[in-house]
Amino acid sequence: MRGASRDHHCCAPAIPSEDDDVRFADRGHTVVGVEISEIGIREFFAEQNLSYTEEPLAEIAGAKVFKSSSGSISLYCCSIFDLPRANIGKFDRIWDRGALVAINPGDHDRYADIILSLLRKEFQYLVAVLSYDPTKHAGPPFYVPSAELKRLFGTKCSMQCLEEVDALEERHKAWGLDYLFEKLYLLTEK
Image (tube, rainbow, N blue to C red; front, side, top):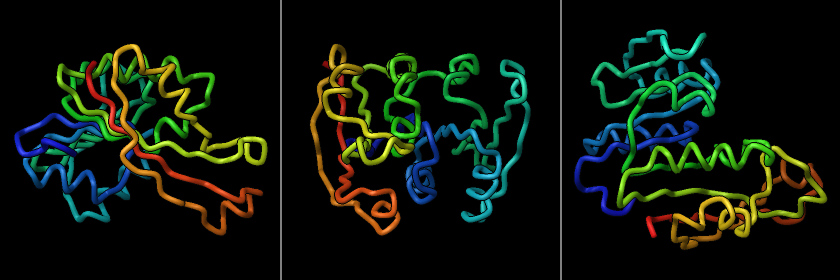
């Protein structure tokens, strides 16, 4: 992320990429992830060959936090909608690659409220969304047009599309899609 030279408190609402989380942590940043799947969290630590501890979260019934031995990575196993009860603080950086597009569109407003509540001043929020013909695939992953991003975040955030990549693969064609683009947006404080 831009300006990632100083120590930042970074959040990933879904484990976007094992390499991303480790890369941020290796640069001295504190990384907090949220993942609903305990299997996914355990696989993350195993694939990265990182030792970790796990403990229950008193604030959220059935939820756990998995922490790397170095303390630089904490992965919360719970719903993003339960996360504010864990008192995890605010973040300088959020990297959302897979969370917003996985959430039912009817829950986008709640999701946006949570994300906005987690941001510190002068934040940078990277969000990857998908563009495709929603009449051919209902999701997930869900189609999130730029107008929806503006509606959700536009009152508090400036938005810039950093890149648009053709992400169509054979599996997407099997869904009936003939195009699929991943768009990466940078949202910053207005």
